[in-house]
Amino acid sequence: MEVEVKRVDRYGRIVLPREWRGREVLVLGYPDHLKILPKEKVDLTKFFDAAEADVAEFGDYHRLKAEVGRKKLSRS
Image (cartoon, rainbow, N blue to C red; front, side):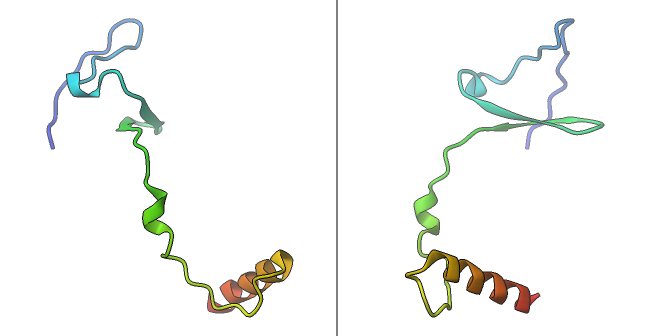
């Protein structure tokens, strides 16, 4: 991790490192500080087989939702 002291100009701007320029960032505002993170595309396919569901009926969405909700509540 690298720490640099940057000056904020009178318009509220700071200069980002060269490798960060030209891409989107997320600016998270906290009461006492800001956090700037790169906005990256997430590969959701790696989570495709990660979910496991032990339910009896997948055909009716409403029954599926109710059963998953019951199981989630019973685990807590």
